[in-house]
Amino acid sequence: MSWWEAAVLGLVQGLTEFLPISSSAHIRVIGPLLPHGGDPGAAFTAIIQLGTESAVLLYFRHDIARIIAAWVRALSGRDGSDRASRFGAKNVDARMGWWVILGSVPVVVLGVFFKDSIESSVRNLYITATVLAVFGVILGWVDRVRPARRELETMRARDALLLGLAQAGALIPGVSRSGGTITMARWLGLTRHAAARYSFLLAIPAVVGSAFFELVTSHGHLTAAGGPGVAATIIATVVAFGVGYYVIVWFLRMITTRSFLPFVVYRLVFAAAIVVLLVTGAIAAT
Image 1 (tube, one colour):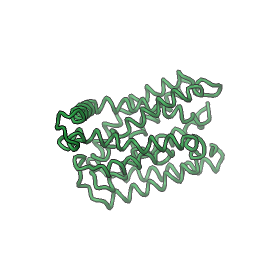
Image 2: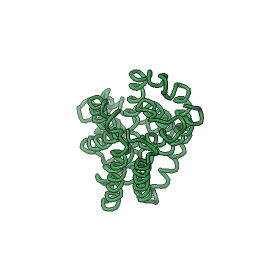
Image 3: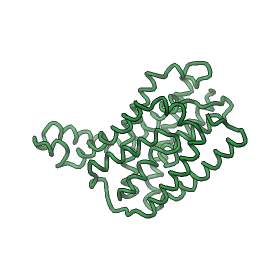
Image 4: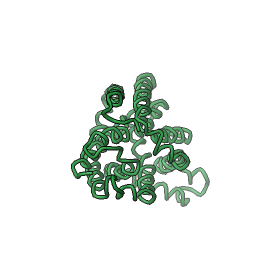
């Protein structure tokens, strides 16, 4: 993979990771259209997500530091030695720490048990196109009919678990990590801004953990003949970081005044484009 192809994939990752349009689907489709050709692979996709997650860490650094400090304080008993206090009953930031941990459990469990399927059968582009369209319609419907009255302070353990299950759906290209969690959050009545904020925070453990797991278990694919290569992966990751940061800023401003309808329309158009590319033979399904 050349440096400019890596930069293109990093640009795509940065532009799409935080929007409810599935970054993995875009990487999966655009990769074969480049001169290098071929699916860059689950390992490449997971690792360049470190770039976009680094952008999340930078943007939310004060929130993250506050949540970690409050969680440690509560767990150590400094907010009270009773069980409720240790689980954040007296501090909303401590509770948020627990909700991120609880919400991360489903994706860890499902990722471990279904890793082989994720890296093979569910990366079929016909599945990706179908998932893009179906979940796009669901996002639009939920955002239209559900109330938006709740903020993150009102979250409960049940909400965190359901949002974690929604995030786990993003293991399938086309669902979208942010799209799945935002859709579930809106179904639970959270405001658009609250839904997006929790989606970004929840993704940190899953994405960082997945990237380091792939580094340990699949680094050979990056350097193998036909693989993307270490240098290309680094370039893509750096580009994804820079672009991703500005997308976070834009997206959080945009959803304060707009619905998710533009993303629904885009998902449907993108799904149709994938089918056209498949039917015409421009790209292969697997």
